[in-house]
Length: 60
Figure 1 (spheres, helix red, strand yellow):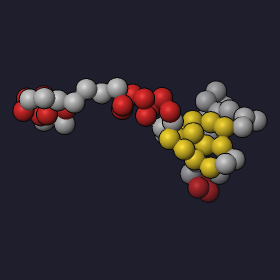
Figure 2 (cartoon, one colour):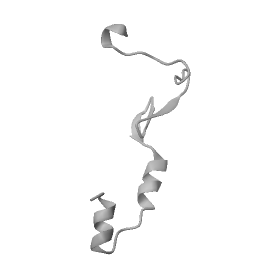
Figure 3 (cartoon, helix red, strand yellow):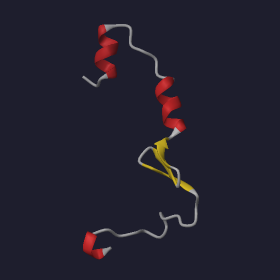
Figure 4 (tube, one colour):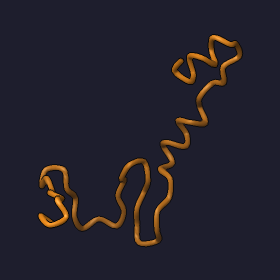
């Protein structure tokens, strides 16, 4: 791993699990899928109804 310039922090590492979360995705033997909690968070967003709300939503 030093050749790839990657290092592991033992306190943040988890071994021997069947699936894990990484960057908003759930990774398992079956493949990768989007984390359900993130999908629910996006679905619960309220849509802006005014010009100011749209600007605020997009961070402008």
